[in-house]
Figure 1 (spheres, rainbow, N blue to C red):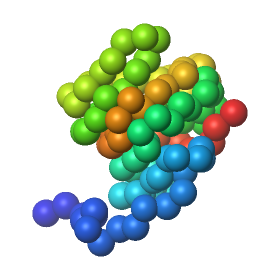
Figure 2: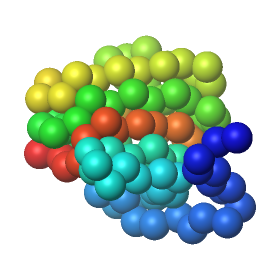
Figure 3: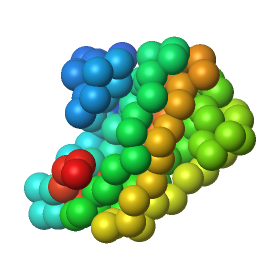
Figure 4: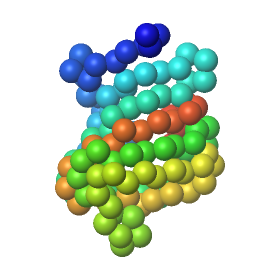
Length: 109
């Protein structure tokens, strides 16, 4: 049996670090500060290039169309951004939902 179970239907969407982005925290590690979240990007939102200085980011697209460097990605795509490395800009061509893990505190610069 798993030591922790999260049901999305029992969680709430919260404002994300950018306008037009919402987060649903599924799990937070008290030890590392890392989080596993569902992220919802509203259609048309552009996230500027940025850095996560304290966490590696792994994101898997569950729904929608996401543009990176002129290429459209669809469900089934996995992205990885090492901590401290710039990535983006990201463009949500439609509403996008991703399952995303930050293995340390979620900070953005």
